[in-house]
Amino acid sequence: MEDTERRNKNAHLKCFQVDLSSFQSILKFKGSFQQWLMDSDLHSSVQLLINNAGILATTFRLTAEGYDQMMGTNYIGAFSLTKVLLPLLENSPVPARIVNVTSFTHRSVEDMEVSLLIHVAIPWDNEKVRGSGFKSME
Ligand SMILES: NC(=O)c1ccc[n+]([C@@H]2O[C@H](COP(=O)([O-])OP(=O)(O)OC[C@H]3O[C@@H](n4cnc5c(N)ncnc54)[C@H](OP(=O)(O)O)[C@@H]3O)[C@@H](O)[C@H]2O)c1
Image (tube, rainbow, N blue to C red):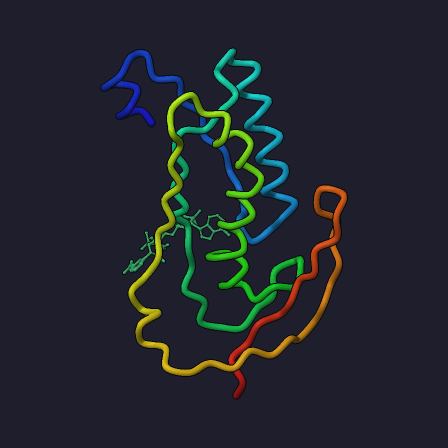
């Protein structure tokens, strides 16, 4: 951020923390971000979203909402963040862009079995969303 500020004196920067493996954290981020845009008198929109965060899980864990940690972080988290930011992306005065970073490692997967381990119901914009655990079968 310091480097960007040095290069562009007009840059208006703010750093937010969000845990993509948590719906609560994503929703909290959306609220804080929108508030910041409003307080800063900035246009209520997003022009570019790069979903770059990702993990390579080496052990099986579940997120608070009951998803496999890696699926929850790398895919469901990125999807959920994109979903909550969609109105702001659509509000962009220029065509907005969403970039999803991924890995060519998926090409190495030849077979996979999915088992539904647990189901949890969580509130999501007044709707109910079903969370599913995900695990390769031993
Ligand atoms: N490195 C490779 O060889 C490689 C190859 C193919 C694809 N990729 C892809 O490139 C992207 C970045 O990889 P990288 O190599 O830069 O990985 P990295 O150095 O491990 O960085 C991953 C980033 O994701 C963030 N992150 C992890 N869990 C998160 C969560 N729950 N919520 C929010 N942020 C979270 C981390 O934040 P913290 O620092 O705060 O933990 C970190 O900044 C990933 O999508 C990855 O799949 C990487």
